[in-house]
Image 1 (cartoon, rainbow, N blue to C red):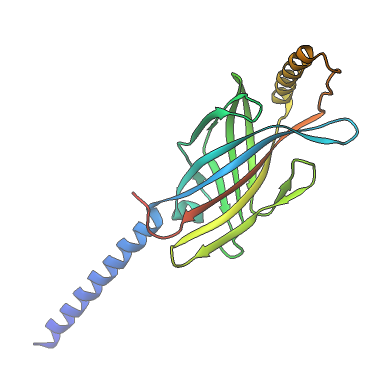
Image 2 (cartoon, rainbow, N blue to C red):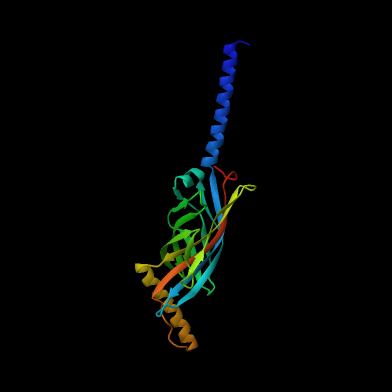
Length: 223
């Protein structure tokens, strides 16, 4: 075999290898990765005198977010077709949907993640738009204290990353007024039935979210 033919075959082999690596890398970067988990959402109130109380809560058994590795690395928006509808602990009909794409910001060195999710929350037919600010660091608890999340813990055997996120969502402006009105009607109705003392009305309302989940970091995606 001549030197020119050998060189041509070597260049062809290199070109094929580079193309294969490029296709593999492209698939890893552009294939959708899912973050799946469960969450508990508590509706809390702060009352005069600085006392805190959990007014209601709901468990969300399964939720998922989807993004490509490239989108995550460049801090792009994430989407989900997730929706939830069910009853709260106090029997309220609650539904939750993502009102627009959320923003995911992971730190691949520390393992910390922040996630902002704008949701439309419907309680007994009344709609509220709230942004849930989630993090693997700390957030306000149901008692006004602090709860902690946990950064990503990568399992190299299964190519998944587990994490715990906590966060809050505030009712502000019109949403706060509407939420207070809904709460007032509820407790007034309960009080009239039970002939009890007049209930106290909270001066602040906020959501507390506690969520655990895992994400596929290699493979398992679908284009």
